[in-house]
Image (cartoon, rainbow, N blue to C red):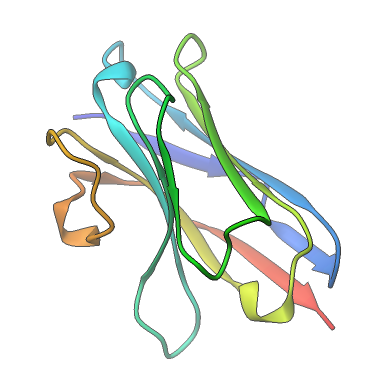
Length: 124
C-alpha cells in the first residue's frame, strides 16, 4: 500500500499561486493513477484533478480548469498541483489520493490510499 504525504499548503491572497506536492513511498508509484481532492468546512469532499500513470492524460473539475495544473514525476514518486489565480472559494483542505484501477475516476470512494491533507487558505 502506497503512503502519501502532502506539502505546500498555506495562506495566499486572492490572485496568488501555490504549488502543492504529494510524495509517495514505495517503488510502485508509477502503477497508480493519482488525484487531488479538496474539502471545505461543512462541504463534501470534491474532486479537483487526476492524472494517468504516465502523466499523458489529465482531468480537471470545471471549477479549476484553466487555473490548476496537475503533473507527476515518477522518478521522484511525486505528484504536483500548481494552483494559479486562486480565489477565496478555493479555500479547503487539499488531499492527494492514489488508485490502482484501470480507469481514471472522479469518485473518491474508488481511491485506495490518501494523504493527511494540507490546508490552503485564500484571503480576499
